[in-house]
Length: 215
Image (cartoon, rainbow, N blue to C red; front, top):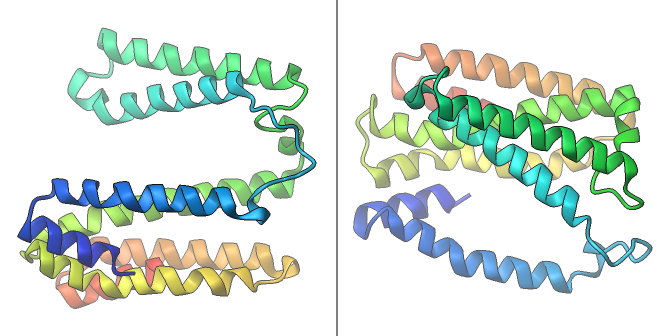
């Protein structure tokens, strides 16, 4: 919850680069904790990692991310954009072919024959994409159109961050029987919140809408 506020304080008092340095010990500590957590390991799984699947999937996503991020600057029809598109498609095809043949694949493609799994995964992907956009754009909007300082934007973002954090444990208590309705309702609330934020004409309404989106 305090992450955006701490980031705002660091950006204003030290430098925006300090935010990245702060995450180094945090990431290392998280890695140590994850390695020691027994429940984070499947004892029945083979010890080897599907390296080929990992490399091709990561490469395809990296090429796609580069295309989406740099495409407008490169020009969508430029050689670099075409190369990034071709690389993403080629690596994606190699990934799928490898996963079909692998004994212990990174992703079990048979899961995509399960329609409820596909629907909920797609809904989760949409929700996660919206969340990432909110985390990235809202602090910038608070500092840009609404004229807050970096520290002020971090303080203002405490409410949406708290809603986001508190909703996690609540979501974990939703029964499987109610999962579809809950996800649909959450996506609906997110859509209304984002639409309201886009049309907001003052900071309180904007923050209230983004808090709803966080929830």
